[in-house]
Image 1 (cartoon, rainbow, N blue to C red):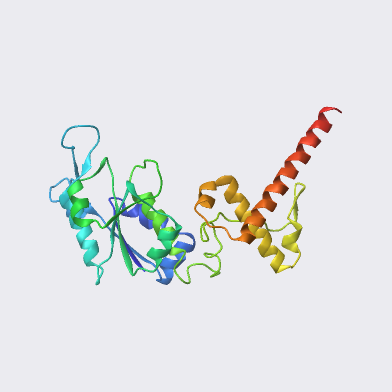
Image 2: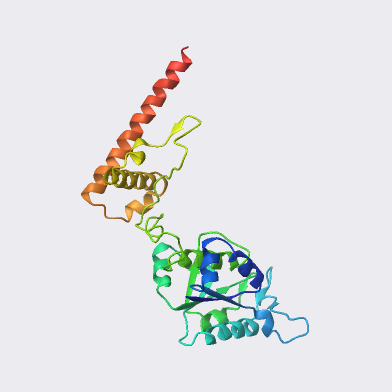
Length: 261
């Protein structure tokens, strides 16, 4: 897969992509990321890419001419074209479902804004979609671009060491991930759940689904509200709630006992 990033800080992108599983995907050539800098298209001696906003106000705005030239050069590098996406706070929320769609595309052009924003005429003429990674304000679009690249790269075949890893992570099935443990079996008095060492794969699968449902109920109930649970999932969630209430009751009893000693 090829991804182009239009950015004033290409080194920020390149250095971040030199590590971890995404770095390995780049090394193997299954992911190709190229940066296109609007400064290369500035025509004055100072390589100016921003100017004051019409109507007044704080900050500066990325100019149309160098910005659109960089976008069009990036698009031209893709023989069949590629969707052009501006990363900004007013865009569609980027999520795992969208990441899975993008992973099937042959290419993508990400436009990272800076300053107070980008001249709106660039967005009107040369942008197909707008995406946001969350309801907060960042200094620029480089970090969102890296988030998109990382999320998509993990879904490209061969990026992860285990092909099942991407299928079993948080949000892959609309749920948060279950708890994970490794050796040793006991750490500071805390034990690995016995079922995980039982060798009973059916029981392990059931426990993991129950914990995933429970964690989602506790931390992201909005995800469950959008989910149509089957009969098995409803039973497992009720089991989780019951066990949690029982643990809370035992902890209260222990606290009362200690307070009376």
